[in-house]
Image (tube, rainbow, N blue to C red):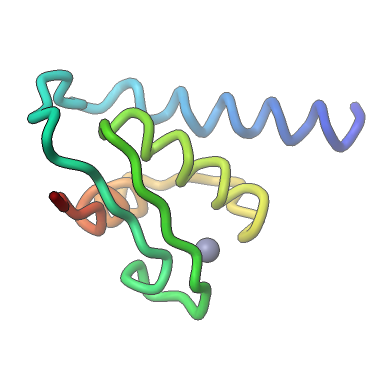
Length: 89
Ligand SMILES: [Zn+2]
């Protein structure tokens, strides 16, 4: 399997692991979601913003795999990510 294919598969697995969670679909459209890798406890300055929880989880998943070689996603890790996502105006 090529590195690109491997990464894509990991990304999809990672994302799929979120879909079993209770992700709220109804969002206040005026609010945005903000995630900062530093808040998560790392030395990384990466931040991202998205309109919905689904969108930000996709971005976090991609970042985690690409920059942090995050191959496994434990329940604890997922909970921590969800807790780190902030609502901003
Ligand atoms: Zn990071």
